[in-house]
Amino acid sequence: MAIDYGNTPGSNQFVSATMNGAAWALLTDLSDLFQFCVDLNPHQTGSTDNQIGQVKWDDAMSSLGETDTVSATDPTMSNVTVSVGRYALRRDVSDLYSLAGPPSGATIADFAARMADAASRARTAAVTAMFGSLSNSVTSGGGTALDADTFYNAMFQLTESRVPGPWVCVLSPTQLVNLQNALRSETGPTQYVPATQEMLRGAGPGLAGLFEGVQIWSSDQVEDDGTDATGAMWGMGAFGYQEMPVAQIGALPGVIAQSVPAASPILVEFDRTAADATSSVIGSYYFGVVEVEDARGVGIVSDIS
Image (cartoon, rainbow, N blue to C red; front, side, top):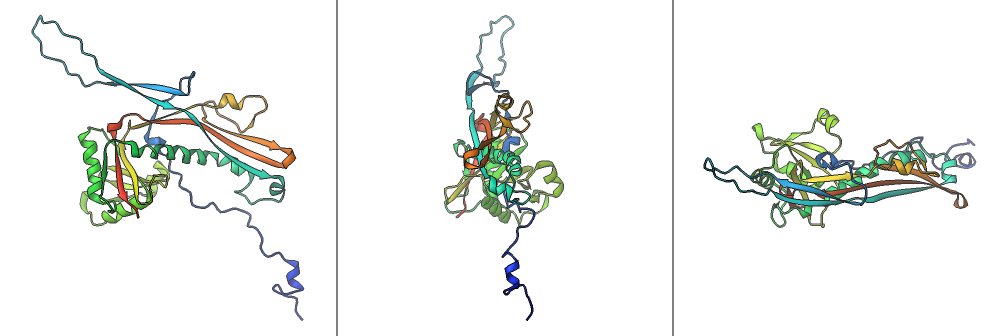
């Protein structure tokens, strides 16, 4: 009788399955919206809250007689406050897991290297969470998917508010699909232009295309209530952020951290619990976001059910 792979005694010499040498990275949305927000750094020390002064320069000179006395006119002044807080992620890895030889892409070093991606998702979620607080919004109507008219209405709102371009639009994946479907019939100079490989190299992940000069991005961080999603269109200056550099923490005695550049806001450090035979990777990121000028943005609400 032949000794074969699928039956005893031959099958006793094999395991049921072996592990590939590399772990496959599953789909993850790494769109980073901070590139469309005003950098309000450096953060002033002394408080986690930092007040950003605002001045409206909209006063015109008045016509006066040759010797008339001009009265003082104060500009409109206000402020917004950005609050910086800690965002963190921890991975625990047992010694046996490491000694067993995990595949490339799933080692403790890989968990540490991926903390930057986790920080990117955190800040994008913080930006999209502000979409619902915008005073101006357009909607496609109850139970209606996003269409071209609603997209144009968002552009009209920014035009009426005198928001300078370029503008960016961020939608949920379902909103994007609905808009693309609505724009299929658009031709000529107003047609939808899908993102090319060259555009993606310059812009990064998340860019879907262009329509009427507006960059359209998609992110699964856009909030929804199960029925409606709230995307947004805005010009630079609608949202802002601040980050706290963490180099001084990384330099403290006893901190076993990856190399931390002087201005880096992300600290990745390692912790060891010998009694549990476990090593931990902890990523910390200190930042805050704020709606700098409400009139520069408009929410886009549409049905996704």
